[in-house]
Image (cartoon, rainbow, N blue to C red; front, side, top):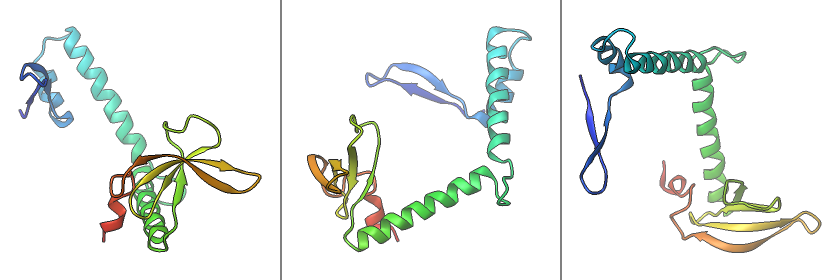
Length: 144
């Protein structure tokens, strides 16, 4: 069975990593109706349900996983094309605290927190979040 120790920053073991594929072997080595065996059975059932859900076919003839993977590629291509034209793209995440705030993903790989004024249809920079090459979408710049 493949297992890895998990240690904290002081080198003290704080956990054990067992790949999901190996849980049945671990489960079978435990006593019937033990708390640990029941916990593993619950985890394995949840994992099976999640995998079945992700592999369900949807109306487009693809699985949820395939559709998700295709959407990632499409989104990356949109960012790549925008950056190649020198255009920043905007999105929201937990760093946006007000309704008018957005993250500006810039062609140089930097990120700014911006305010969007709907009346004037203009963005104004609130603050620089990440320098060039360090933003969420920076990897797109050099990806072939």
